[in-house]
Image (cartoon, rainbow, N blue to C red; front, top):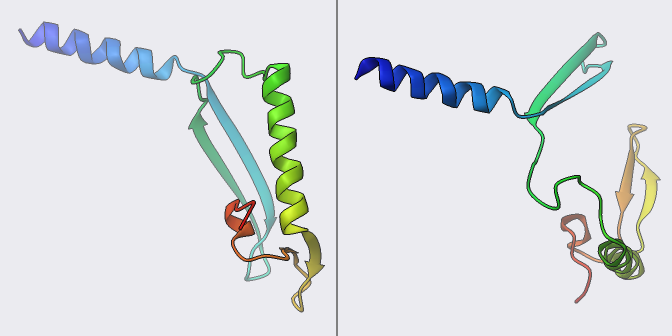
Length: 101
């Protein structure tokens, strides 16, 4: 019985590690004046159409939503007093994806 449970656990682990992983590494100065690199590793999403490509209709729909959001929110990049660029929006809630009243 223990052999069966161990075999199932091992098979489950093998199936999990076989999924594609994406690794993103970013480097830059930290708040103390030093330099730091961070690496994020996560599983690649397998939900959707399979190859990650959008159909022509889905692409057109996404562009339409984006245009609606830009027309409503009127985003612009503003540099703060600390020298960091930030987005500024004409309407409240746009930073959360709101695209209409």
